[in-house]
Structure formats: C-alpha cells, structure tokens
Amino acid sequence: MEYICYISRAKIDSLHEQVQSQQFGDTLEKVTTETSRTAEVKGGLALAKVLQPFTAGVTYGRKDTIQLERKVKTAYLEKLNEILLEIQHKEEIRELDSLAAIDDAPSLYWYYEGDFTCVDLPAPVTGESVATLASRGTDFELRLDCSMRHFSESSDAHPIHSGNRWFFSGGQTMRLGGVFVLLGREGDQVIGTPLYLLLKTSGRPGNVL
Image (cartoon, rainbow, N blue to C red; front, side, top):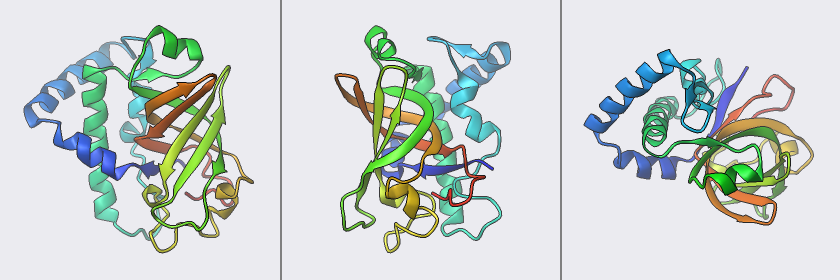
C-alpha cells in the first residue's frame, strides 16, 4: 500500500492562490490531450510519474484507517493536483537523476524517488520542528527539509509516535518519491523542501509517516 505521507500545506496554500480557475481549465485540457498522445513532456520526465498519486487514487494518509482531518486532507490533495498541473504547464518539473541535470537545465521544481533516512531532527521535537531527510543519488546527496506537522500521521501534540520513531531516530530507511522545491546546491549536496512525498514502502512493519 502506498500513500502520500507529506504535503507542505503552507506552500500549497500559497501556490494555490496564484492558480486562476480559467488558467487551470486551459492547463487541464492541454495536459490531458498531451498525456493521451505521449507520456513524455519537455525534458523527458513522464507526466504520469508526477501525477501518479492522483491518477491511481492514492490518499493523503493511510487508507482504511481512522484519520483526523479527512476532509481537509482530501482538499489538499485536490489543491496539490491542480498546482502540479499548473507548474508542469508553465515551468516544467524535471527529474533529478544526476548533478548534470541541474547544471544543464536549471529549474525550481524537481521530481525525485529514492531511499531516505532522517539525518537531523533537533530536540525537543514539536509540530514546529524541521526534520532533514537525506537520500544518496548517483553522484549527489539530496537533503529535504520537512516540517513535522505536515506528515500525515503527525500532530502538533504528538509528532513522534511508535510508527515513525525508528525512522526519525535515523535507524530506518524508507522509499519516498515526490516533487520538491530546489533551494540550493553545495558541492554534491542538493538542498530542497518538498511539496509532497509519496511513501513507497508502507507495506513494511513500522512504516507509518
């Protein structure tokens, strides 16, 4: 079972305000037409890869569980879908597979999938805390800064629980994929912050984010 375990609500709210209804309508028609004709867009990233969580009916948070804010989470999924379509139409979401990709075509929004570990989470942990997740690519290390309150199973009162403690203590690796905002690069280290993260390994015991 896969599910979206993280959505940056603050970023989504801000970006969604910029999306005009008529512009989105035009974008949706264009993307739908292009998708039926070919899976490739501009720089070669399959649009289906970015939008897979939405076309496959993936939820924000685990299915078949009692979730807090179920209606709110559904609304954020819809907002995120609209925003990704708009970004892909205007700016292109590229796939991070090497440092050369960044050097060849600078872009603000990138897609990446890989095995992540938590490498930094200052104590005490609260909903305001920021966790840094790291993944090693072919010739780079990607580091993503994530607000604890935006993980689907977290809350301001209890950001750490029995299902995610091992991961956030740095003792577990999880397969995650998603679109992130590129913040900078220092040598072979790429720094960003995600719009969303899809948990790809949620079938394993303890994989709850």
